[in-house]
Length: 316
Ligand code: ATP
Image 1 (cartoon, protein in one colour):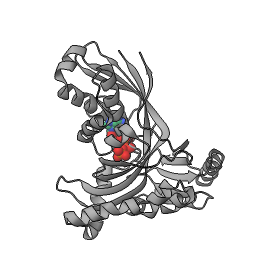
Image 2: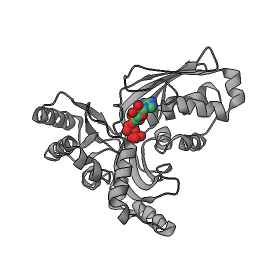
Image 3: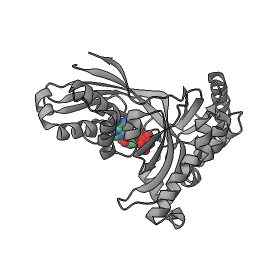
Image 4: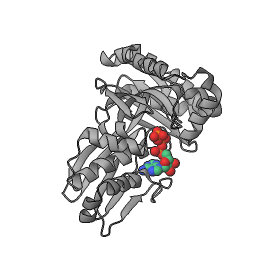
């Protein structure tokens, strides 16, 4: 195979709990992650040189070595130097549909797509667990982006346990174009304000982490009970992001006043989502909130939960 085109879905958090600090500077997290149909397209083909080249038409996405997709390709070149020498470099084109710095893991999804794509075009034959192991070296959300669907993520987010697929729920996403939240800022601020409640000992962290398996939210997911899921979604980072960004808090309140399953900020925000029973309901909710807030900076997407991570769209 010479080249391939991949679909890289965004993710939302259905649950995000911060339970402690880790010695590596990250937080101990308990999350439930969910892929959605809003996705970027990532095209990968051999480049004329040994180099990695990134092309992306989005003004806020870097085309240099700071792009997560570049770092994923660089990792593959480092781990498989002979294969790299044999096949040469890669050219990566990203068509961005996922809003940037939105708490939707857009960059992480692009990096996951590059790992999957290079595995294909270099005929490496890596398995999904092997790809996820490489992904964990690049970032906490990237292993999930490889496999996608619905999963419990613990540790710093890289330890995954798949859950029953939830693919009959629709959602409206909304994000202000002029608001971006830095993920490091959100976690740092949470630590400053809430570290008193952190669990410090390894045994305590282990038992708190294990509790998620028998939690009401996981039960609701296993039973595909959309109404219960909507009531039980929760995100600790709202406690620091919503007070700092009143517009985001107002957006969440506007969704909460609608006839929906539930609403929450995804990850470190500022994207807010509203879970809905049907596409028609999602479109109606979007129109009502759009009219009510009436701000040209506020963008909406109607999308749905999906049960897959990186997908191969075409290969030549
Ligand atoms: P997460 O939910 O994983 O924190 P996010 O959705 O909040 O991610 P991204 O869209 O991944 O955030 O972008 C965060 C920052 O990373 C942006 O400011 C952007 O400049 C940079 N970045 C690097 N590579 C990419 C990429 N391939 N796509 C988008 N942003 C990227």
